[in-house]
Image (cartoon, rainbow, N blue to C red; front, side, top):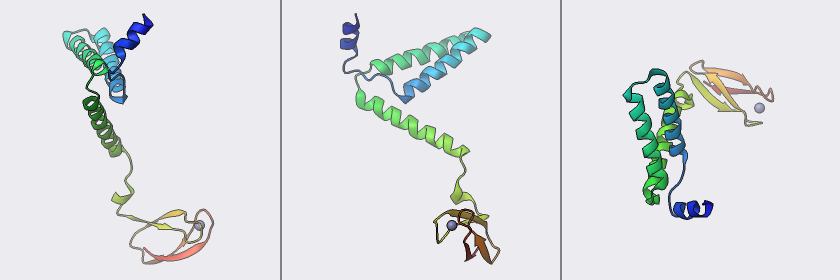
Length: 128
Ligand SMILES: [Zn+2]
């Protein structure tokens, strides 16, 4: 039985990050169905499960791989919205300590200032 299953799965795509995400969505819709009932949750769960099986059993490896890449870049974009972007910070400047290379963030527009490195405590002068 195990051998038969292995033969059946040979050359098929199997699981990836996107399929795990689809499964997670399917779990959520399944729980929603158990709580709220209603055919909407039922069909959503069904669609997600069928979609997941379709991808796992697909022999079109390249296409599934591309789908997964698209999913991963989309996921990174969404996660990026919640991350702080240092380039977008217009009120601060980043300097590197000349002796230990530690990054130091200082406020902009204060003229010449003496910066004390938080790591090695060396003082250096920069225009902010
Ligand atoms: Zn330093």
